[in-house]
Amino acid sequence: MRKRLSSAVLAALLSVVALPVAAASGPAPQRLTTCAKADLLFCEDFQRVPTGAGTSLKWGVDTRDGSLEVERDRRGQKVLHARTEGNGRAFLKVDGFAAPGNSFYGRVRVKVAGFPTEPDWAHYTLVETTGDGPEVVRPLGGQYVPTLDRALWGVGADGGPTGDWTNWRESAPSRADRWQCVEWRMDAADNRVELWFDGAAAPDLTVSTRSHGGNQVDFLFPRFDTVKIGWQLYQPNGGSYDIWYDDIALGTKRIGC
Image 1 (cartoon, one colour):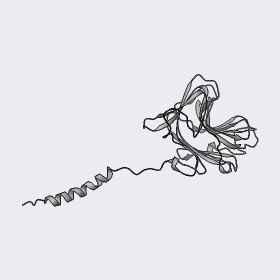
Image 2: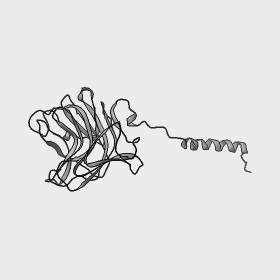
Image 3: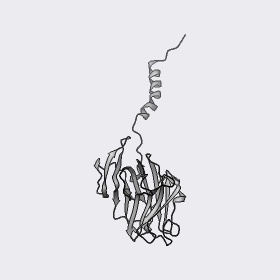
Image 4: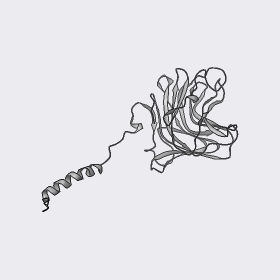
Protein backbone atom coordinates (compact mmCIF):
# COMPACT_ATOMS: atom_id res chain seq x y z
CA MET A 1 0.00 0.00 0.00
CA ARG A 2 1.33 3.41 -1.04
CA LYS A 3 1.95 5.93 1.69
CA ARG A 4 0.87 9.48 1.04
CA LEU A 5 3.03 12.40 2.08
CA SER A 6 1.44 14.61 4.63
CA SER A 7 0.51 18.09 3.46
CA ALA A 8 3.14 19.59 5.82
CA VAL A 9 5.98 17.46 4.41
CA LEU A 10 4.87 18.14 0.83
CA ALA A 11 4.81 21.91 1.45
CA ALA A 12 8.31 21.79 2.94
CA LEU A 13 9.70 19.89 -0.08
CA LEU A 14 8.11 22.32 -2.52
CA SER A 15 9.61 25.32 -0.69
CA VAL A 16 13.12 23.81 -0.96
CA VAL A 17 12.72 23.16 -4.70
CA ALA A 18 11.46 26.69 -5.23
CA LEU A 19 14.47 28.38 -3.59
CA PRO A 20 16.79 28.39 -6.63
CA VAL A 21 13.97 29.67 -8.82
CA ALA A 22 13.32 32.55 -6.45
CA ALA A 23 17.03 33.40 -6.29
CA ALA A 24 17.34 33.31 -10.09
CA SER A 25 14.42 35.69 -10.50
CA GLY A 26 16.05 38.34 -8.29
CA PRO A 27 18.06 41.30 -9.63
CA ALA A 28 21.40 40.44 -11.30
CA PRO A 29 24.51 41.75 -9.58
CA GLN A 30 25.56 45.18 -10.86
CA ARG A 31 28.59 45.09 -13.20
CA LEU A 32 31.22 47.78 -12.85
CA THR A 33 31.52 49.78 -16.08
CA THR A 34 34.77 51.09 -17.53
CA CYS A 35 33.83 54.69 -16.75
CA ALA A 36 33.49 53.82 -13.04
CA LYS A 37 37.26 53.30 -12.82
CA ALA A 38 38.97 56.04 -10.87
CA ASP A 39 42.32 56.04 -12.70
CA LEU A 40 41.10 57.09 -16.15
CA LEU A 41 42.09 60.39 -17.75
CA PHE A 42 38.92 60.48 -19.86
CA CYS A 43 35.96 58.16 -20.41
CA GLU A 44 32.72 58.28 -22.37
CA ASP A 45 30.25 55.43 -22.87
CA PHE A 46 27.40 57.78 -24.04
CA GLN A 47 24.82 56.19 -21.73
CA ARG A 48 24.13 59.53 -19.99
CA VAL A 49 24.29 61.63 -23.15
CA PRO A 50 20.85 62.47 -24.63
CA THR A 51 20.10 60.98 -28.02
CA GLY A 52 20.26 63.45 -30.87
CA ALA A 53 23.01 65.90 -31.80
CA GLY A 54 26.29 64.67 -30.32
CA THR A 55 27.29 67.29 -27.76
CA SER A 56 28.48 67.16 -24.17
CA LEU A 57 30.07 69.40 -21.55
CA LYS A 58 32.80 66.73 -21.23
CA TRP A 59 34.07 67.03 -24.81
CA GLY A 60 34.09 69.31 -27.84
CA VAL A 61 33.18 68.79 -31.49
CA ASP A 62 35.24 69.35 -34.65
CA THR A 63 33.26 68.93 -37.88
CA ARG A 64 33.34 70.00 -41.52
CA ASP A 65 30.94 68.38 -43.97
CA GLY A 66 30.15 65.97 -41.18
CA SER A 67 28.06 65.43 -38.06
CA LEU A 68 27.97 63.59 -34.74
CA GLU A 69 24.82 62.02 -33.31
CA VAL A 70 24.15 59.91 -30.24
CA GLU A 71 21.75 57.08 -31.10
CA ARG A 72 20.74 53.63 -29.89
CA ASP A 73 22.14 50.51 -31.50
CA ARG A 74 20.31 47.20 -31.94
CA ARG A 75 21.16 46.24 -28.34
CA GLY A 76 19.51 49.40 -27.07
CA GLN A 77 22.88 50.84 -26.01
CA LYS A 78 23.76 54.43 -26.85
CA VAL A 79 26.62 54.93 -29.31
CA LEU A 80 28.14 57.88 -31.14
CA HIS A 81 27.46 57.97 -34.90
CA ALA A 82 29.94 59.99 -36.97
CA ARG A 83 28.88 60.70 -40.55
CA THR A 84 30.83 62.61 -43.20
CA GLU A 85 30.39 63.53 -46.85
CA GLY A 86 33.29 63.38 -49.29
CA ASN A 87 36.53 64.28 -47.57
CA GLY A 88 34.80 65.81 -44.57
CA ARG A 89 35.57 65.27 -40.90
CA ALA A 90 33.61 64.62 -37.70
CA PHE A 91 35.48 64.31 -34.41
CA LEU A 92 34.73 64.15 -30.71
CA LYS A 93 37.49 66.32 -29.23
CA VAL A 94 39.08 65.90 -25.79
CA ASP A 95 40.63 69.31 -25.02
CA GLY A 96 42.87 70.21 -22.11
CA PHE A 97 44.22 66.67 -22.08
CA ALA A 98 47.35 66.01 -20.01
CA ALA A 99 48.97 62.60 -19.49
CA PRO A 100 51.68 61.96 -16.85
CA GLY A 101 55.03 61.76 -18.60
CA ASN A 102 53.25 62.52 -21.91
CA SER A 103 52.41 58.79 -22.18
CA PHE A 104 48.98 57.15 -22.15
CA TYR A 105 46.77 54.29 -23.35
CA GLY A 106 43.56 54.55 -25.34
CA ARG A 107 40.66 52.20 -26.03
CA VAL A 108 37.65 52.49 -28.34
CA ARG A 109 34.98 50.17 -29.67
CA VAL A 110 34.40 51.11 -33.29
CA LYS A 111 32.52 50.00 -36.40
CA VAL A 112 33.12 51.49 -39.85
CA ALA A 113 30.37 50.84 -42.41
CA GLY A 114 32.83 50.91 -45.31
CA PHE A 115 36.36 52.10 -46.05
CA PRO A 116 37.29 54.16 -49.12
CA THR A 117 38.18 52.38 -52.35
CA GLU A 118 38.99 55.57 -54.25
CA PRO A 119 40.94 57.61 -55.06
CA ASP A 120 44.19 55.65 -55.09
CA TRP A 121 46.05 55.96 -51.77
CA ALA A 122 43.04 57.51 -50.04
CA HIS A 123 44.08 58.20 -46.44
CA TYR A 124 41.74 58.18 -43.42
CA THR A 125 42.14 58.93 -39.72
CA LEU A 126 40.06 57.72 -36.76
CA VAL A 127 42.23 58.94 -33.84
CA GLU A 128 44.45 62.03 -33.92
CA THR A 129 46.62 63.51 -31.14
CA THR A 130 48.13 66.99 -31.13
CA GLY A 131 49.79 69.42 -28.76
CA ASP A 132 52.84 71.62 -28.22
CA GLY A 133 55.09 70.50 -31.08
CA PRO A 134 54.80 70.21 -34.86
CA GLU A 135 53.90 66.53 -35.27
CA VAL A 136 50.25 65.57 -35.68
CA VAL A 137 50.24 61.93 -34.51
CA ARG A 138 47.57 59.52 -35.79
CA PRO A 139 47.68 56.28 -33.79
CA LEU A 140 44.66 54.84 -35.61
CA GLY A 141 44.19 55.43 -39.31
CA GLY A 142 44.89 53.78 -42.61
CA GLN A 143 45.08 53.94 -46.36
CA TYR A 144 43.52 52.41 -49.46
CA VAL A 145 46.40 50.69 -51.28
CA PRO A 146 45.46 50.32 -54.97
CA THR A 147 48.28 47.89 -55.78
CA LEU A 148 46.68 45.47 -53.30
CA ASP A 149 43.10 46.71 -53.74
CA ARG A 150 42.74 46.77 -49.95
CA ALA A 151 42.28 49.24 -47.11
CA LEU A 152 44.96 48.71 -44.46
CA TRP A 153 45.48 50.05 -40.95
CA GLY A 154 48.56 52.15 -40.29
CA VAL A 155 49.96 54.56 -37.70
CA GLY A 156 50.72 57.94 -39.24
CA ALA A 157 51.82 61.53 -38.75
CA ASP A 158 51.91 64.89 -40.51
CA GLY A 159 53.09 68.46 -40.02
CA GLY A 160 56.51 67.72 -38.53
CA PRO A 161 60.01 66.92 -39.78
CA THR A 162 59.02 63.33 -40.63
CA GLY A 163 56.48 64.61 -43.18
CA ASP A 164 53.11 63.14 -44.15
CA TRP A 165 53.12 59.33 -43.82
CA THR A 166 51.02 56.28 -42.97
CA ASN A 167 52.89 53.17 -41.90
CA TRP A 168 50.31 50.69 -43.33
CA ARG A 169 50.91 46.95 -43.22
CA GLU A 170 49.41 44.06 -45.22
CA SER A 171 49.05 42.11 -41.97
CA ALA A 172 46.51 44.67 -40.68
CA PRO A 173 43.48 44.92 -43.02
CA SER A 174 40.84 47.51 -42.12
CA ARG A 175 37.71 45.37 -41.69
CA ALA A 176 34.36 47.00 -42.42
CA ASP A 177 30.88 46.53 -40.94
CA ARG A 178 31.96 44.85 -37.72
CA TRP A 179 32.56 46.03 -34.17
CA GLN A 180 36.18 45.93 -33.06
CA CYS A 181 37.87 46.83 -29.81
CA VAL A 182 41.00 48.84 -30.64
CA GLU A 183 43.63 49.80 -28.06
CA TRP A 184 46.72 51.93 -28.49
CA ARG A 185 49.69 53.05 -26.42
CA MET A 186 51.63 56.31 -26.69
CA ASP A 187 55.01 55.85 -24.96
CA ALA A 188 57.07 59.04 -24.83
CA ALA A 189 60.20 57.18 -23.66
CA ASP A 190 60.85 56.12 -27.29
CA ASN A 191 58.08 58.06 -29.09
CA ARG A 192 56.51 54.64 -29.57
CA VAL A 193 52.96 53.89 -30.75
CA GLU A 194 51.60 50.35 -30.31
CA LEU A 195 48.22 48.84 -31.23
CA TRP A 196 45.97 45.93 -30.23
CA PHE A 197 42.85 44.69 -32.06
CA ASP A 198 40.31 42.71 -30.03
CA GLY A 199 43.01 42.10 -27.43
CA ALA A 200 45.65 40.80 -29.89
CA ALA A 201 48.84 42.81 -30.40
CA ALA A 202 49.64 44.13 -33.88
CA PRO A 203 53.44 44.50 -33.65
CA ASP A 204 53.86 45.17 -37.39
CA LEU A 205 52.14 48.53 -36.88
CA THR A 206 54.48 49.74 -34.12
CA VAL A 207 56.43 52.93 -34.82
CA SER A 208 59.09 54.67 -32.73
CA THR A 209 61.72 57.42 -32.80
CA ARG A 210 63.89 55.83 -35.50
CA SER A 211 61.45 53.31 -36.97
CA HIS A 212 58.51 54.90 -38.78
CA GLY A 213 57.20 55.57 -42.27
CA GLY A 214 58.42 59.12 -42.81
CA ASN A 215 61.55 61.07 -43.61
CA GLN A 216 64.77 59.68 -42.13
CA VAL A 217 64.81 61.96 -39.10
CA ASP A 218 63.68 61.36 -35.53
CA PHE A 219 59.95 61.05 -34.94
CA LEU A 220 59.13 63.04 -31.79
CA PHE A 221 55.84 63.39 -29.94
CA PRO A 222 54.41 66.84 -29.23
CA ARG A 223 53.40 67.61 -25.66
CA PHE A 224 49.89 66.19 -26.00
CA ASP A 225 46.93 68.39 -25.06
CA THR A 226 44.19 67.24 -27.48
CA VAL A 227 42.86 63.84 -28.55
CA LYS A 228 40.31 63.64 -31.39
CA ILE A 229 38.24 60.52 -32.13
CA GLY A 230 36.01 60.20 -35.17
CA TRP A 231 36.72 60.18 -38.92
CA GLN A 232 38.47 62.21 -41.58
CA LEU A 233 39.26 61.39 -45.21
CA TYR A 234 41.89 63.64 -46.78
CA GLN A 235 41.31 63.19 -50.53
CA PRO A 236 38.30 64.43 -52.55
CA ASN A 237 35.70 61.70 -52.69
CA GLY A 238 32.06 61.59 -53.72
CA GLY A 239 30.95 59.06 -51.12
CA SER A 240 29.70 59.26 -47.54
CA TYR A 241 31.09 57.49 -44.49
CA ASP A 242 29.41 56.17 -41.34
CA ILE A 243 31.35 55.23 -38.21
CA TRP A 244 30.02 54.24 -34.78
CA TYR A 245 31.91 54.54 -31.48
CA ASP A 246 31.32 53.27 -27.96
CA ASP A 247 33.30 52.92 -24.71
CA ILE A 248 35.98 55.52 -25.37
CA ALA A 249 38.62 55.60 -22.62
CA LEU A 250 42.05 57.15 -22.06
CA GLY A 251 44.24 56.21 -19.11
CA THR A 252 47.70 55.70 -17.67
CA LYS A 253 47.42 51.89 -17.79
CA ARG A 254 46.22 49.49 -20.46
CA ILE A 255 42.43 49.48 -20.26
CA GLY A 256 41.67 46.22 -22.04
CA CYS A 257 38.67 45.03 -24.01
